[in-house]
Image (tube, rainbow, N blue to C red; front, top):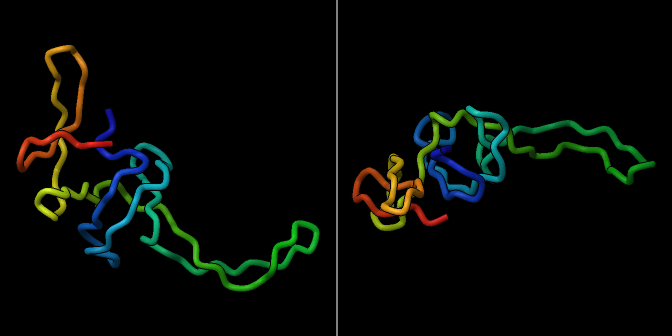
Length: 105
């Protein structure tokens, strides 16, 4: 079970974007996630009249390593670690390590 999933609210805990908040757009692979507004790079795009693409410099979100982000805990308003807990009915759920509350997603 993945501790960070698509749609989760995260905080960057290290690197050039430390402290930024964002939403996970997708998981690129097992170790990288694409986060909205984090780890932006400038990309030079050539114009393509057939596709209707205008040329210029475009900001593009690049993947960030999963070890550099942490889930945002709305109860404590801080970044928090995530654990996995089995319920009585056999389902596995994610819980915050600091207060034991369920991650709602």
